[in-house]
Amino acid sequence: MPSSHFQQFLDQATVHDAAAEHPLGPDCLYGLYVSWAALHGFRAKSDQAFRAGMKRCGVDIKHSQLHMTGPAAADYILYSYPDVA
Image (cartoon, rainbow, N blue to C red; front, side):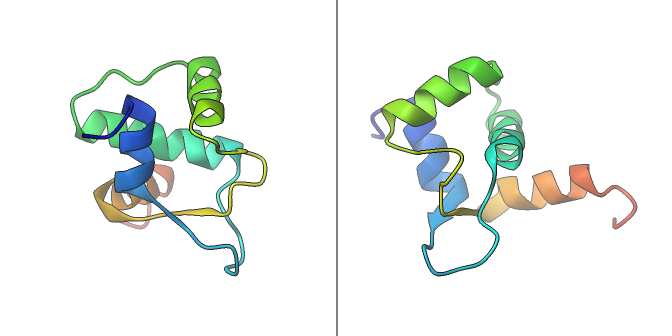
């Protein structure tokens, strides 16, 4: 079992890729988290709690080198760009 709610999010909705361009910034990472939480029936934590959780998981949200993946990524993209659907 993942060590925390936030680690579970990281494991299921992100991939680390130091070589790829355009990693997720703080706002996009939080938006992806909100989508992930909604898909799993969780109430998303506040932005402040999210940032603290990411720090505890060892993620520097300003330089994360993370990219989105999985169902939460699709939900986030569709929600962010409703005219695409």
